[in-house]
Length: 258
Image (cartoon, rainbow, N blue to C red; front, side, top):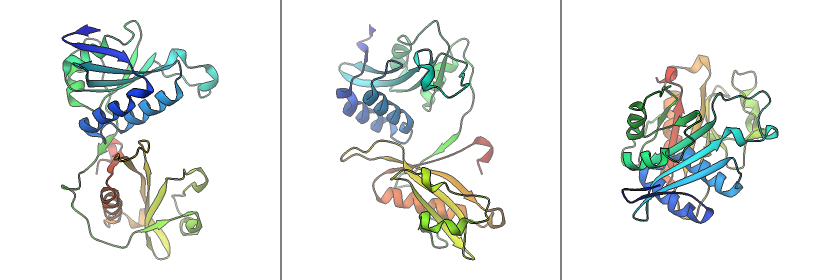
């Protein structure tokens, strides 16, 4: 598409550094999933994945990742999986004209599912006819300048050797399924883990680039809740991530906003 000096093209591996720079400017934490999807798609080069770049006067002003469910081979699907739509889209854009240009390149005769974090893009879609919206998880991040540490009990890093500290508890970690970069932190009381959380990168490792580090699976045993332990734990790992120069990302379901 070429309108208002905007051109939408299919990206290649050589575009990744420029795409990453755009997504970082837009907000790396907000674009963590999109960054990971784009990186994986450009590495795999599968026919059912497409990465689009939208440029205005040679500068990237929009990026989209599309997974075409119709093209995914049966052997690559989970048994019985039926998404109920034809394609998935993750995208970010600088302005409404970039959004409009990229939408023109999506299949117009198929049903799409869009994951959108940017209010500007949400507003654009809400104005379109025939669009239904569903609220997703709540995402949180913070900058080093705005971060306020929460003091409290000592936080320790846990390994598979500490599995006994979880014995008989509601929450059990599956250490054998954790990747090399996955870390677990917790607060120990009475010789057992009272609260714990996992920390792992979402975005790919790139030299001299910040990464998005997810804080996930926060769980406090029932008897230790409402004591501020979870808040202290999240504060500790958030500060750790910020001091390493990365962007922290914590998310939860809407019914667990507290």
